[in-house]
Length: 278
Image (cartoon, rainbow, N blue to C red; front, top):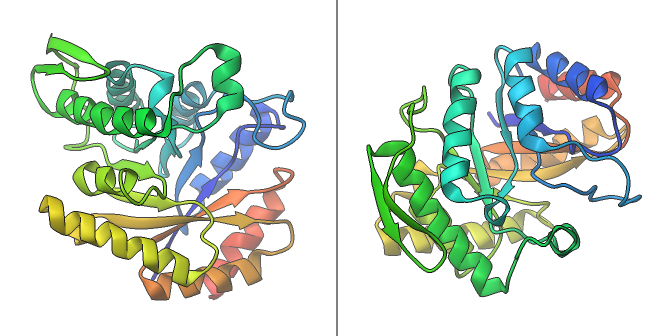
């Protein structure tokens, strides 16, 4: 049986609306996790509209919910030093009593990065930074001290305390880069997420690339959960869940329902009903 999550992009709505929807999801056993994103500008017009900051929201969500797992799908590695990310992740794991999952990606949004003067870099820069940053984060969360000298980061006898509540914070890496991103998934991730696959065949093809990377780096591919984003459009819950089943049958473990339109609680009820009836 497939697993279900929701993602509420934190743009074009108010904090009370998000809070209400997340708390409703927390009451629904069919929803295992709730996600936002790590962007500073909206990703749908108007692009100068409101967009709440993701990590701050997650700290509040951790206190406002009891059951669902929480995270941002996904955080841009270039937005903060990986040592800062590791400390934030460990703290959120304590605030949520072990319900936090760390989503990471290479970054892509030039509009907000250029506006804020945050260096995004070339595709190679982004891939190198993601892989190196993941090495730093994993070490800081697991080891007493970390010493690292790389292309982007240098740490000397660095520590991150307290360690997380969980033995290991699950790491979700999102992306479809065949050469570098999926290799980084094979090395470090507990879950791989693909955004809005065109069809089952497109997902299966990339999953085959991931399996090959796992074989090359000596990782058991079965240790990595597979998730995909699917859109949750108004009035489409029944048809959407039927589409999700095709992906579950092909080997996807989790569908992340990416919210579209107004945060109407009735739509979440409709999704939960469609999942129960599937």
